[in-house]
Image 1 (spheres, rainbow, N blue to C red):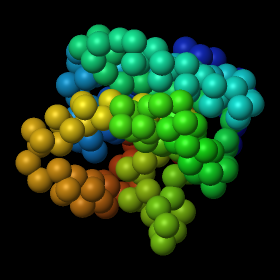
Image 2 (image 1 turned 180 degrees about the vertical axis):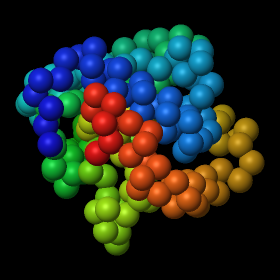
Image 3 (image 1 turned 30 degrees about the vertical axis):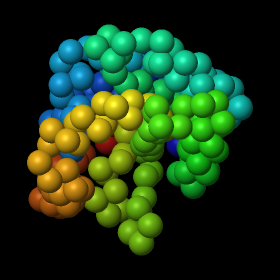
Length: 190
């Protein structure tokens, strides 16, 4: 579902709420809290509906991230509320975006993670609560510095266990608990 009435400030606020309540609040990503507290997350919002423009903006954001010290800006969330409402289309788009980042010389410098309101792991049902590990209020592309990811993984014992722990957390929380978090657009769950 596209959210054409969503303003840039609303998309950012909804994404911050999701980050604080779900990603950090449920400890889905143990590395997120530190960069959030230090103000090292940059939020960018794309309100248009053109895929080519979104990829161009992703490249511009990658250049901006590369120009900053990690202590100033460690990661970027690019939020796109008005485009790629279908998860499979978004998944295909993300693959194209990764190829473009590589062509632009960012391979080995940045990783691209993706989140979507209808994210679905292969082999799961659409309503499987475990899909919520990668669900955000809007289609979102996350630029991460490879060096920062490596340092975080080195500092976190048993980083491979994060995924399994997240599955356990979400299964214990259940669909009602996820809905109660209010991490969808405008504070609603999706």
